Length: 472
Image 1 (cartoon, rainbow, N blue to C red):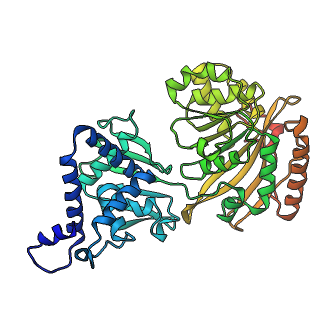
Image 2 (tube, one colour):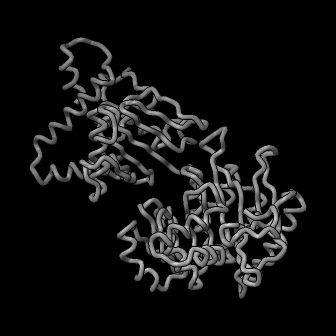
């Protein structure tokens, strides 16, 4: 190969440009393609697709072959683009990898290791670095972008090229959102990449990153053991899904679970391979069609990722209302106190029923809501902003919410409050709830929330003046 390239230089002794190297290596692979029969070409296409999607075996095969082709004096001194760690990696990325995106996807450059998102707008690449979107020097041309898009969509047979919106996943779990066609300006197609920075799904790792308080680790472990029904709330990119995955990793692996999501975002079979978790990908009409089957299931708990509509909300409420424990869900909202009203309204719009009755069921069956946000000074950092406990008093016919934790942005620390009473799941879980109550009381003594009266949301009953200022 080296000799062939050398002959093509018209005997001129000079250092090859990186572009010339890429063209030469591509010419070799094109020659292999031209010599192949139809069956072999199908194998080659599949191998190329897997290499771009991040399959280790196919990636290494390409890199090994490229390394062999680059073994020669003629390739010495080639200037490699600064964002690639080596000539071999650079040629692979440009021809059969992710082009300039590769260093961000595979963390080969240290500056990308704490970057949770990247955007490709036209040929321009922006990466979230230290909480800000920064334009990168690498460019990805139109032809290369089209090749990437075709490969991404081949990995998801349900996606069609002519549709202007797609969501697909790389082998390593990175989510890709694609906008193209009539949805974007000519030459300004958009690809949004999102990766999870938390490699170790533990509360200790979350505390190390500053997402949750170190002193709350034992408390959260007890909450998992107690079997509470939990909702993780917050806006996009606030850390909800990562915390859900962390929370679930502490779950009893002998229990049977059902995970329902609108897309295959969380690979539960990889995160908890020993746990019998069934995973369903369904949304809207598809989810509605299997609702009866889900409700008749004998699962110990259900996980609902990214609840978005009345169908998903209703399934969650129906499952919890028949006594299920350990249910987990994520939902997009920044208003935890108005969340039950939002859920009840969408369920009623879809299925009818009493609004107050639905609100009462939500407060009765959802135990805890964890509220997450992004730090304003660094959008790459996630933060547990608060924890609320929902409840319902049959004697007073009132729903209520107790604030258990609040992040103080001025003092930059977490503050705590123990509820006056803890009527939880009961039964065998009492041992955990007793320790939880004691822990909360001790945490409150150290760093208390000074004023946090019990909230009685007005949207459940007509405003009662006796309720005072603690009504929502």
